[in-house]
Length: 191
Ligand code: C5P
Ligand code: MG
Image (cartoon, rainbow, N blue to C red; front, top):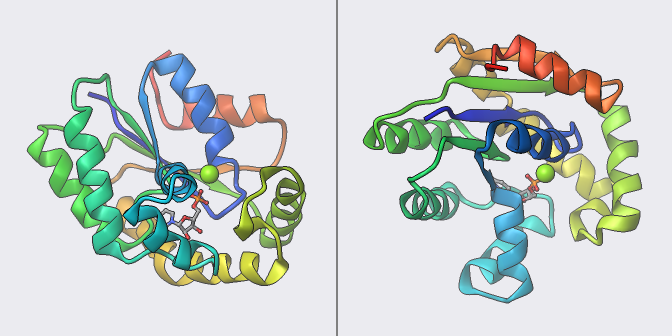
């Protein structure tokens, strides 16, 4: 198996680049945000719980998110590998992911971190909010709160993965195809 984490703050382009990686490498996409949103739509217990955090731009508690990911991985273990998009977002989630993958006899091969500065991200998200219908894309307050969560809880994962020698930082500003090529080369993904 070949497992990738696509990493970065909200609006960095994780979803866009995941879609391209999926097509090229035939991987399974796990976007935790998408899983939450589809649960919210059909009002599952998980969706109702998650919504109270997501609408405020806060992170859902670790135990909820980790249980959801465990479930997903245990039911789809027959794959070439996974792209994790939006997970892990805390050190606890990172530790849990290592443990789960170890049980599946695999690990994280590359963490591709997209770097974009905050003002650019805010304008991208406000733009996306006009079409995405996402409640958390609708106001600058919520967006700023998502950055605060990212800076406090998620960014420390960069060190966590740098220590495992799997971290690659990529400039996330520019043409989508150029960024994709940079991901493939910097991450040393096979062609
Ligand atoms: O990844 P995405 O931006 O789609 O996530 C949307 C929201 O889902 C986050 O702002 C957060 O509220 C919630 N989320 C979370 N924990 C994760 C992934 C997403 O709480 N690991
Ligand atoms: Mg996304």
